[in-house]
Image 1 (spheres, protein in one colour):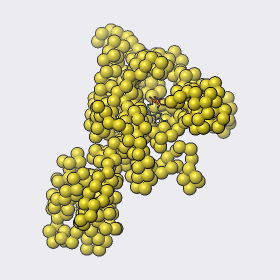
Image 2: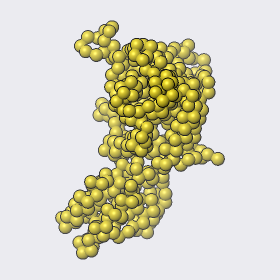
Image 3: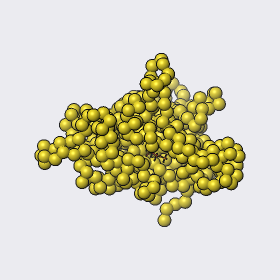
Length: 445
Ligand code: ATP
């Protein structure tokens, strides 16, 4: 049986994000700006680790996937060919009573306004295009329109031929990209779950049409497992196949990897069989041939595409939610109990791997602390903190999810050893400085 969602988790994580420097509301000194967020000193590390873990699994550890970093600004032709100008819309309704706007397909009750609870107050649904349009160059007007990409995927399709010709890859092979996408969402919200500017991690896997079904199954399984391997409990994840009426205009089969958010199951990633829709459309619109000739079999075909499309920012939020834990513990060094908040991140996801903590600011401890920092920094992202009582500093690192704290105390001056504290068990080991790297490396690699 799957666990129940915990609505109280949402505020706890959002507060911790602000308090510890994970995520700040954007333009906060001006009162904030419409569901946009900035990633602070720890949040930027978390986000980088999410993206790095994805890249490692999707590109580095495979021989059949190459990377790409395509432009964000793109001409209308791309979005006309892809169908986004026509189809990338959400149904928008206005409440005539309170004037709030909603996305019809996300309403629990399509007849009752969730804001003012008026019944039957919605206008007819209008299809609202989610793409941000702007102008290239000094003149605003027809002929100068450009779009901010609403997905990274089209970069892979329009570069299909370039990559095929330069990378020596042939189907089945993939092109992966991580980058910002923009959607003028009608109802952004739930913190960084749905924002107008966000980061995606997408991979287009080009296959022969008759193998598309099996590759679709393969990528559904692979992608679900990725989250489990990085520490999200399996019972907080599920795969959900889309019904016929849910499919995007380019898809014949889609499954979402869903996570149990505090408000219930919701999408982390979509895995879609996009068929040959995109390549065929771009071939038609551009006049370039985008098919593949297999000299071995003599076959010529337009590859089908299996696409795992994940959100980096949304995934970072899921890692935060899954890692959050509170437990009653004896105060370290004292008898009384207290609640300890700890982010039990997988070490690959944790922003800092090690915190170096000299017991006091005294200069004689700074020398060995700097030696330790110099030893560890080339290998791991480290935090350094020399103020406050050590118990409070441990709590701070627990809230950042730092797997190990290394404490330098006055005994270090005699024995050239340090105390290594484990985040999860709070167990402490005395380790010689000379052996520290060998002690930590296997646990963090
Ligand atoms: P939704 O149904 O939630 O609007 P979608 O099915 O349109 O999302 P996709 O087009 O499949 O989303 O995008 C792939 C991934 O990109 C999503 O699974 C999600 O992780 C991320 N993503 C999409 N839109 C947003 C957004 N507005 N804010 C943050 N992440 C997003």
